[in-house]
Length: 114
Image (tube, rainbow, N blue to C red):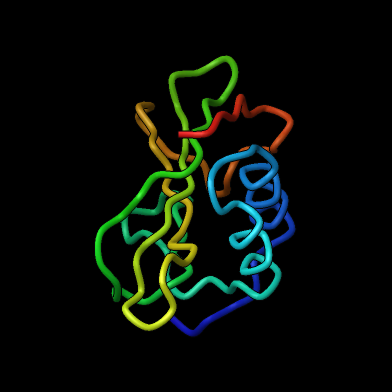
C-alpha cells in the first residue's frame, strides 16, 4: 500500500486518543501533525499503521472502549532505533462477527491513558 493521508475520521480518532495525558504525549502530538497511513490490516478491520514494520516492541499508550459495545481500540508506539519512540498506529479490537469499515466516531469512545 502506498502511504496516504489519514481520513477525517482517522484524524479525529487520533486527536482524541492524544487528548489524554500520558508521558511524552506532547512529542507524540507533534508527530501526529505529519503522520501518514502506511498500512492497514489485511482482515478488513479499521486498524492502521503509521510505520512500516520497523522498530522494536509495541507500547500501548491510550485505550478506548466503544460505548454500547464490547469493541475497542488502542493507540500504540514503537521504538525506532534512530528516532526513539514514534507513533506506531491505531489497533482495532473487535468482538463482533463483523468489523466496521472505519473507526468509530470519537464521540462514541471512552478513552483513558494505558
